[in-house]
Length: 199
Image (tube, rainbow, N blue to C red):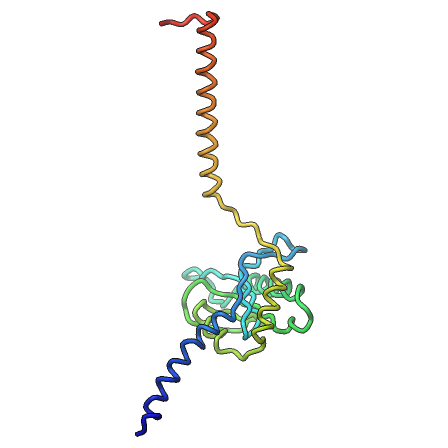
């Protein structure tokens, strides 16, 4: 066996690691966005990568004893609507590369098409995205991501923890100011003799 044959697998192994990192760099994601014409509808996640534009809607795992269905029709319809809204803000050449996805929140490995919507688990979705044929070049991934970021709006997500912290600080400040004003009032009344004090 020659040295070249022995060294060959090592060179391939070295190349495979940067390739995986490069594939991750070619992904763009948007979270919690909405279409300007449908501000009430939250689009949870848009994954733009070489295998397409995947519009992801979450589906909680069905309860034990529930009817055995892959995804309720209402969730499938919501997946179609979210994908249609994303496609509507893109040029015509990209619209056929938008894929509606319903992603279960459990980790049961499964993938099935329901009315042209891919219903799958998070880990299976990652495998499908990585193994699917390339339909977008790196420049197209960047172009689509920039267009979506410019045309879609951020969906307002409430942050109650920050509000509560601000409310506590506000209440404390009001109490301190009120106490200072009351103390100043008592001192002034005592000075002018308008308020008889018990001590």
